[in-house]
Image (cartoon, rainbow, N blue to C red):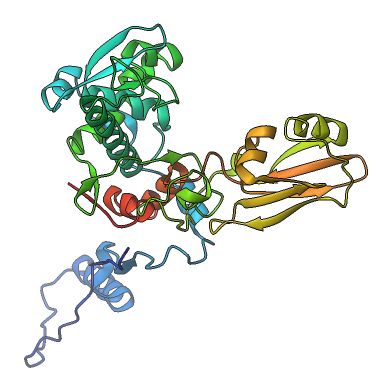
Length: 375
């Protein structure tokens, strides 16, 4: 559970000096000195001991992520951590030296590369999360990505790899990975000189750290872009109910491009897409959402006599997520979607928003992965 944390600085204490009044003999003191002394006394009387500009403030972290996020959007868009040029250069050699093992990565060209795990994590974080995100969000992503590949390595060692000859692949089937040259091609030389060091800092500062639940390594540290305000229970999207993948609020997201995203289909287009599941006669009155999940996604939707899960509708229509509403007119059907991705586990935009509001990477991870610890 996230707890209140308080920090106090600059509190003022007023102390009255004891002693008798003294009569000051002004003879011999020049007029300029008297004038300056009078100005100082006047300022002190008006502003008090804080005249040096030191503020007095109490800062508090919200104790409930269900609380209203009226001010969170402004906080997310505010200045983030240090500018990228403030991060010291971290070499691949350093990442190799702090790596516990090498990752066998199946590349898209069919070759298998052996990459020191912390170099691999830097390539994953760079490919999966914007480098403009807060450093604490990048750290959270690094721990999640490292946990996943460690779990895949363990499966490989037990003869249960999805990719024979490799721990993971370099695509969204596992998690996207690009080496330095691959990143240079999709980003720029300048990005490699600046932003990449920010990513490497997040990786270096969390090196070796993994997620555990009840003493066991987390095997499915899922993550996605944005939830639209709430994440899903794993069993409402996938087949398994995992105790650390519970529906939680994600109230600090600032993902405008994933808010109220509209997908419009004519009745003929929709009927054609649905034909793989059955024949339907669509009207404005027989297309509706029937039920919702705990995470506010669509559990079941009806298209005439055909009923589909929210996940099925999302995949069939190519919607950003299964958190959608349906609007019908005589001409077309509009699906209005919030969030992006499967909405199970870590929300990347939510992590960035939490970081901007003062949460560190461990608090972020323990919020999105219920009951977990980092070790």
